[in-house]
Image 1: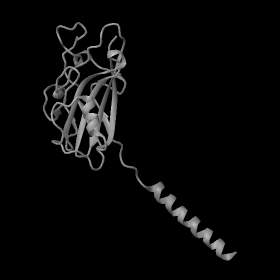
Image 2: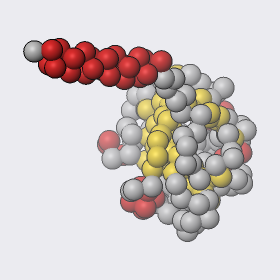
Image 3: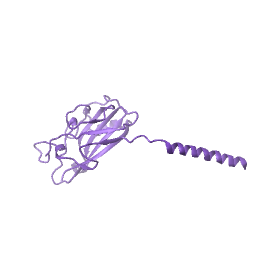
Image 4: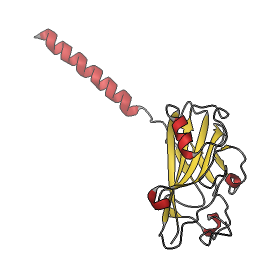
Length: 189
C-alpha cells in the first residue's frame, strides 16, 4: 500500500509541475492584419472603389487601402495578400487582388501601393491584372463583403511564377501556408 501512495504522489507532483509550466508559458503573439482605411467589417470609402469609366458601378478613384501586419509566425519566408468579393458573380466571387512573393521583412503596404505593382509578385485577378482593382458592385445588389486575406508561407519570395490566378495560387500554397490573418471590408448599396 505504501508503494501505491508514493506512486500517486509522484504522478500528482508531475501533473502539477506540467500544469504550472503550461499556465505560466506565454503564448505566441497573434498574427494580425489591419488597415487605417477601415475597421474589420467596416465600410470602404468611395476612393477605394474601382474607376472603370465604362462601368457605371465603378464610382471611385481605385486607390488601394493601406495595410499593415504584425507578429508573423516563425518560419515565414513570404506572404500572399488577396482581396476577394465573396458576394459577386451570384456568390461565385470576384478577385480584386492576387499578390504573393511579398518578402518576410515586409510589414505592410502604404495607401495606393497595391495599385502600382511594386513590392510583390502580381498574380492575375478576375479583371486579368496583377495589381489592385477596386470594388464595383452592381447597383441594387446590396453591400458586398470583401475578404482581405494575408497568408504567411514557407515559400521563398521568388518561388512562384508571375500571373497565377487565385485558384492556382491556393493550389500551390497547399503544404506551405503557416498561418493567416483576415479582415472584412464592405462596399455597395
